[in-house]
Image (tube, rainbow, N blue to C red; front, side):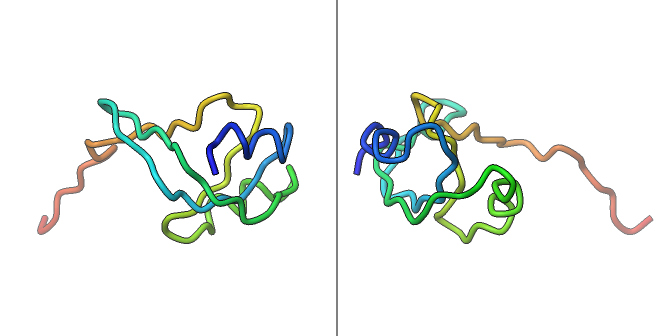
Length: 82
C-alpha cells in the first residue's frame, strides 16, 4: 500500500513496516510502497527500530513523506595495524 494509505489506517502513531518499493533522489531513499506489520507503542519504538530486520523499519505516521537519509561516507575511519 502507499505510505499515504498507511498514514490513514494508523493515524499519529509508530508502525513497523516492510518496505516494498522506494526510489532514490540524491542522498534520500523515498519509500513509495509499504506493508504495515503492526503498530508500535511510543515506549517501544526506539527498541523496535534498532531490532528491526532487514527490509523493515519503524516510522511515525505523522510524517507526510517516508524519507530515509542515506549516509554514503562512514562517520568515523579507524586505522588498523597500529
